[in-house]
Figure (cartoon, rainbow, N blue to C red):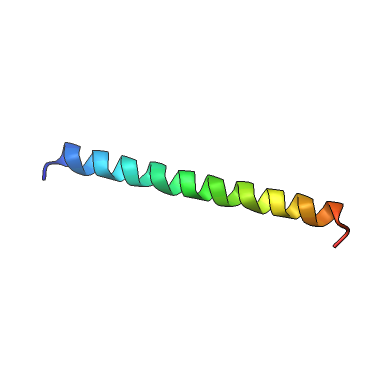
Amino acid sequence: MNIATVGLDLAKNVLQVHAVIKELVWKFRINLRVGLTQGA
């Protein structure tokens, strides 16, 4: 494996992690909003 391949794999992993975190934050915000509107 050369440096370019390692760099590409690293970039892909970072993008995947970022996408997962964004999705979790989005779900958390929706749940928070629903909880607030229900007066919980």
